[in-house]
Image (cartoon, rainbow, N blue to C red):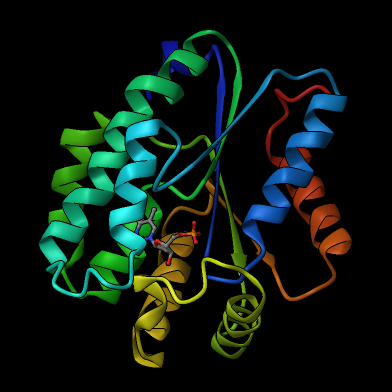
Length: 221
Ligand code: TMP
């Protein structure tokens, strides 16, 4: 986002492989920031708006086998464009702190690398859908492939969302996703904070908090 806009709110995103714990960590951080007096808005991708929720259902419905990679890519960006317009930008302009469970880095990792669509096409769509909106800070919860697959399996046994369309990829797909995330973090060390996601949730939350308060001096907590 432009410098003038950034001066108002703060935009933080959580990224990582399925099962990395980002949804839990984002909730814990939101609670802590609210206790510190911040006006926090939580959003999720795909989803975040009523239209986005409908797009999410299409994307994750495991009976939608025929969705081609380009249609998948456009649907993720359609949900994002709606979220930016309806939730993220208005909240940032109002000076709020916006936390998003996934954003464009997910598309670079999953569609760019996982689906092998390449970075270039994702960047082109980012221009159209996000108009230069980038997170101020991104927490990447890094876990290895085995942990990701084991947690996804365990979750699929206990949750009704069991077996989404995106869960049906092979180990090589997830390996490409993980490597892409790590490359992105190496390339933009000033934006990314990489936290080991394998520990107990409370310990991971402490590591996220420490990294965040060190990196964002504008946060007053
Ligand atoms: P979630 O389970 O973290 O909410 O994410 C839903 C799935 O969508 C997950 O498997 C990751 C995938 N995804 C993409 O492939 N590309 C994207 O741009 C986003 C936001 C999510």
